[in-house]
Structures are given as structure tokens and as C-alpha cells.
Length: 579
Image 1 (cartoon, rainbow, N blue to C red):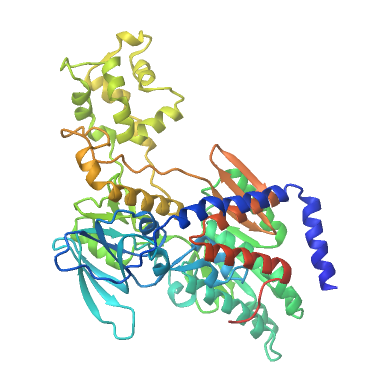
Image 2 (cartoon, rainbow, N blue to C red):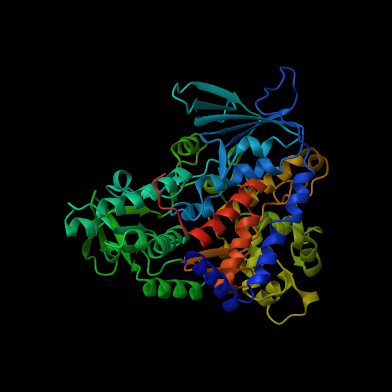
């Protein structure tokens, strides 16, 4: 009977979705040739934990963290002219976008992690790894103070020439009473494992014969706080786990299960296209997920969550058996202490320049969730830009002079290009013409005040980059490329003009390239927002999600494990053991 059901499910999938074959081909290709070629050509020369010789003249690079940013930096660093020390409280890289799948057994925890030593052993670079946490950064003396994560808590100090801070962030509780004591998080692999055990515990306790009906109902009330991608995906995964697997194992309590999703704003998935938001909300209502928008959590006890309606101020309580808090990120204490040292105490995260160098330092770089790029404003440098572009010192800028400086201006200040795009202008000349009125292009000439007026609205287009894995990975790759070509670009700078000084910057500034984002919504349906304002929703997008996430795994080992987990779940269902 079981084999018949499996056959029917496979057959139905291929009948209803004829494009499935094409996606399977995409999946095989995206996870195949190029990765195999790149890994096959890596030179295997393991140099893990080898300390540099006393007379070694190589620059020492210390990397704090093995998340998306730190791992991407390590994978792309190729120059043998550095000695690298990696310090992290965990000795592995975790593919965090699949953590919601780990919480319900769709994917096993070990399938989404790769030991750091496996990642760096194939590189022709001296690398040392120490499992420890950094508790202090001394920028003045170029030292980091570390503490072992083992029982002995042994402390040690590491010197550096360059420091790469990629420590990520912690969960932001917004100082809500009771959150730390009573809520579970979903940021690390250990968090996902704890959630998985707790879900099963709730069902097992609710099945005991001596439990009252009210207590049984409370235990099977699952609350997710936060309507961002992580919270929405977890709620969808949990609904699938309950409706597809647990209801058959716990038939006596299946009608008591309730999943609630709380979001303080008016809609979930605010960073996505409105079409995706509307579809997700409609699907959750169809699935029976209790979606409460405009509800801000004000207090959490061991059995109840208190919420306040933003519009009316009404306070209500929700009993729960398990609560997952997924509302954003906050800065780690060690980073906050470091920010005070360098005069950034009033900021929420570390500020870097466009080359990812921490402002106020010369040799410290910060990537990923612990930092943000402080894009320089055009209006701060407008006089210097005018002076640099006005080569004949005439006091006015002609079209020809402006065109010669155009590429450097757009490279240095990306908000200019974004402003022109939003205004549907082809170049800065159109902007100048707009400010001067109906004048022939050749006759346009601006003085400094007119230039200020023409560019006065440009800085309004500045936006901070989102705290996503995609941003962190691109930053790590960019910085590694800069380190690989450090000496070459010192002699032959390739960046834009220095408008306040002479010469050019060594490198082009970091530019984030958005490659799209996914929002799995359960029921083998996923929403995708891809470049070019292309929105795709449905079963076919789910197979695209499978393909992309399989190809983005850090190694062939994790790639094969994740794919086999998906196949196992499709055939046998999810595992409900407490292991």
C-alpha cells in the first residue's frame, strides 16, 4: 500500500508539472560541472595549525568568524603571501538558509555544516584555526584577546597585521521582558536542533493521559514572532511537518494544533514584492495559520505571550507550548566595545567605507551582519568634485569636462547612478540640462552653486544593504580579491579618482549585486523575486529553489547529503524522533 502511494505521488508530480524534468536538468547542471572543475584544480597542501616561522615576513591576517562572510573570504583567498589565523567559537560553516528545514527534519543538521578544516585544507595558503571566542579587540596595539570554548577557558592573545571582523550578529530581543528566558531562537544549528526536540516534546506531553484539555491545547499552540523570511519559512515548514507527518502519528491531538505568526508591521515579508506578500498571506490563511499583523509582543512568560495591537493599543494574551523569536539582529558585545574604542559608540553596527575598511582604522575590515557600509555623500565632496573636474580652472564645468569625470563619479558615488535610473535619465548631462533648462548640450556650463543644486537630491537614494547571507558572501569574495591583488594594485591603482586628494584609490569600491531571493511557503510552493522585477510563485519555483540551494552548498559532501535528505523526506516522510 505504501509503495503504491509513493508511485502515485511521483506520477502525479510529473503529470501536473511537465516542467519538472527541465528543473531537474537545471539542478544537475547547476550543482555539477563548474564546481567539480574548480574543486579538482585546487592544490591540496594541508597547512592547518602550522604557526609561522619566527623570521617569516608574511603579513598575518586574523579572521574572526566562520559564517558566510568569513568562509567566503577564506575560500577565495589565493595569495600565498599571507599567514592566516581563523578564530571562531564553532569549527564549521553552516548553510543558514536551510535552518528552518532542519527544525522539522526535512534536512538533517549535519547535512548543512562543513568543518572549516575541510574548507581550507585544499588551499595553497598557510592557515591556522583555533576554536575560541574573541572577547576584546585592541586596535591600537593590533591584538585580539581570545578565550577557548573548552572547559578550561584558557585565554591567549593573537597579533595581526590585518584583521577581518566577520563575527555576525546576535538575536535582537528589543529588551522585551521574558524573551531570553522563554523563547527559542533560529540563528544557529544548535537552535534548530533544540526547536526540533521541543516540537516533538510538545506532542508527546500532550498525548499523556493525565493532561487536562486546556493544558493539552496550550502545549500544541506554536507561536512564531517575526514575519520576515526566517519566521515565515519556519511557520510554513512547521505546518507541513504537522499536517503531513505528525497528524498520522498523534491522531488523538491533531485537531488541537495551532500555529500563530505574529508581526508588528501591517504585512509579512515586507522586503519582498507586494505580489509575494499578498500570496503568502492568502496561503497562510488557507492553511489555517493564525496570521496576526500589527501585533507587537510586549511580554513573554513561561506559558503566555502578551501582544499590543499597534492601531488600538489593546493588550491580549496567547497561551503557547513553544515560542520562536525571529525579529532581527543586534550587535555582539565585543563589537560594541570595539566601536567605543574607535569613536563609533553612537552607531548600531560597525561603519565601514566602501572598501569594507572600518572607519577610523587602517588595517581592520568588517563584513557581514556586524557591519554596514557608510556610503559617502556626494554633497560632502561637491566642492572637491567640482574642483577636480574643472581642469582649466575656469570656474564653470562644461559638458566635456563633466563627461571626463563621469565614470569616476559614478564609481565613487553609486547613488548618482541610482538617482539617474529612477529619474529615467541616460546620463549626468540630462541632469545638468534639467537644471539649466532648454539649452543646447554644448552650451551647458555650471558653476559650483548650480552643480550643488543639480545634485542636491542625489543622496536621497542611499540605502543600507540588507543583512543577508548573499551580501555577506559577496563581501567576503570581494575582500579576498582585494587581498589577492594588494601589491599589484598598490603599484597600479584601478579605483576611482580621489576627489579630496591626488591619485586614485587602489581598488574599485564594493558593489552588491542582487541575485534574487526566495521565500518557501510550504506545500511545495515557493515565491521568488529575481533580478529584473521578475516574480515567480508556485510549484515550479520550488524546484528552482531546490536547484539553487543545492548548487550553493559549500562542498560536494554537503551537496549530496542535502539532496539525499530531500529524497528521503519525499519517499519516507520526516523523522519524528527526538534525536
